[in-house]
Image (tube, rainbow, N blue to C red; front, top):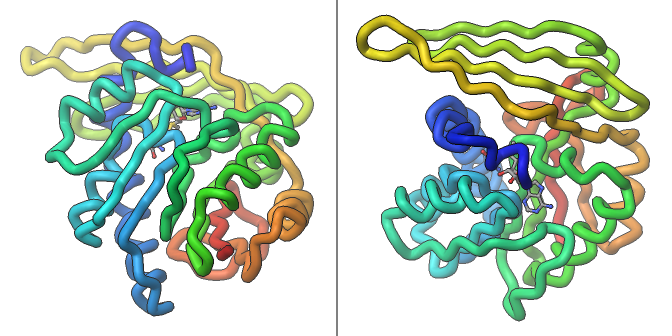
Length: 244
Ligand SMILES: C[S@@+](CC[C@H](N)C(=O)[O-])C[C@H]1O[C@@H](n2cnc3c(N)ncnc32)[C@H](O)[C@@H]1O
């Protein structure tokens, strides 16, 4: 995934985005515990720099934990930072065959939107189904068509203690196109600039996604808001949770 392999962008991505994985692993763990799930194994698709794998591995004392990603630089950071016990594999989330099954399969932080054709989403759903234990959970989140409309041709700016972040967003058909600039503060008060290539994400209709999951065989498909509360779909990001 060349976008994430631009210069040292993976490094700054890792520093900037750990909070998403922290919130998600806490919210998801709460949901799974409330529902009496037994999670001994996790497969995280498009695992990036491995933050979610590490947090879940620690929380659930997993017997098997695997992360797959298509960016060598993201995987290098994951491997360098691992506390051990997790296997990181270079591979495509739409076509993998690990010859083993898991209690939980995840794909987080709108990584699925990188698949630009809906056929690729369906291909991934089928591979996930094959790799899930009976009763196992498949969990992912995606940027919605609502986000596509809301952020059409906009300019997004955030600042915090260590980073300023600017994103130019425009839309083309069902695609959100971003170009991101990150300014990381150096100890001497100067900034280092990181600039990405253009990143495309495709958005699809919520009903089409739910129907496809049902067609593949998933049951109890729930489309939720953050914290796994049911949503009215009027949101930028939907969190999906379903079972085999
Ligand atoms: C927004 S990052 C999310 C990373 C991680 N899930 C997280 O929560 O921080 C998207 C990730 O998807 C990966 N990716 C994109 N397309 C992929 C594919 N077809 N197969 C595997 N990984 C892919 C990228 O390399 C990148 O690491």
